[in-house]
Image 1 (cartoon, rainbow, N blue to C red):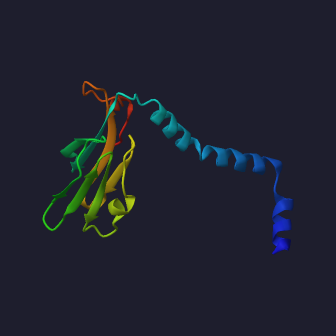
Image 2: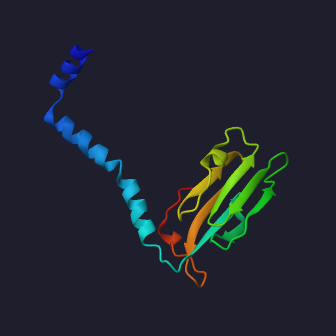
Image 3: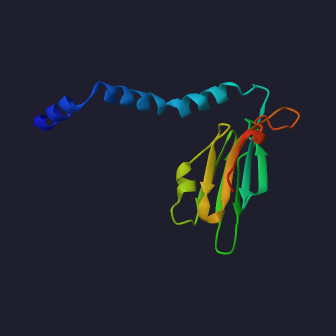
Length: 147
């Protein structure tokens, strides 16, 4: 085992180490950008959770300490169901009958920019911020979505 390690260390060039270090540091870049976006959220901003099915918004709620606990069922199509739970400042897909259960395993979401997706049901739960007068703070005009 040590022979293999010695072989690989001998064959490693200085540029290889620099490339590995740059890639390792670059892997943290999305976390830094997300943190910067969260720090720019105004304390007066309203945090809104929207639930969409097939791109059409079917439910929206402001997430705050005063938001009551609520649980409801959505039926995206025949033989499909999603149980959505809202609890104060967080929301989740509590239960569904999709095969992979990724939306359920995502758990609670509460921060702006977070999403929970159930692809077989075409259901998306997303958290966004809005100013006190109701306008979206994150301008979606800057986002390019390939079709």
